[in-house]
Image (cartoon, rainbow, N blue to C red):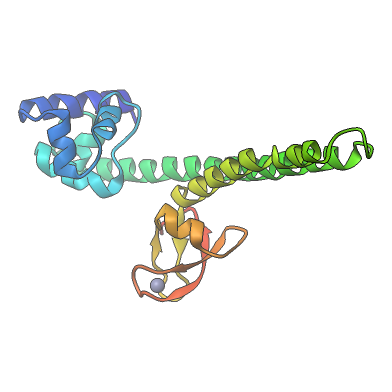
Length: 206
Ligand SMILES: [Zn+2]
């Protein structure tokens, strides 16, 4: 899919409707930055926003994903293949993100462990006690930042699946941070059935 072409198409259609970027952002309840990123071809509108955006711009989802007005011929076939392609692209990107999360997680632990090991091996009397404590704590802040970042990745990549009702969704960052977890399986409240359970991370929505 040609993101640059789609971005230019969104910008053209927005201007046709005499909307500013911030007015459009307001109508969709997103930031100005998000609209600017679509129009510069840096990202695609989220699938949850796409239909609303198309309604405002008076175009079809197929037009949007093609970056131009598509003729009625081959319409359905075309739309279907584009939607499948989009879902696949997101799944591939999410898999990469989760690998990145693992690397960040390991680095976060190392950054905490290494100073502790160093501090333990410096001979007694060679440095003051407070210096030893400082070395141990020097890894703490980068470790916490690393872990918060890894959790952010885990939140946005893929979905959590409620095993009680089968609902798949993206929870809030706060909910993910506060939830107990074993690896990527987290104890979360399902927004669909409102029950708490251990929910697995899944990549695909279907
Ligand atoms: Zn549920």
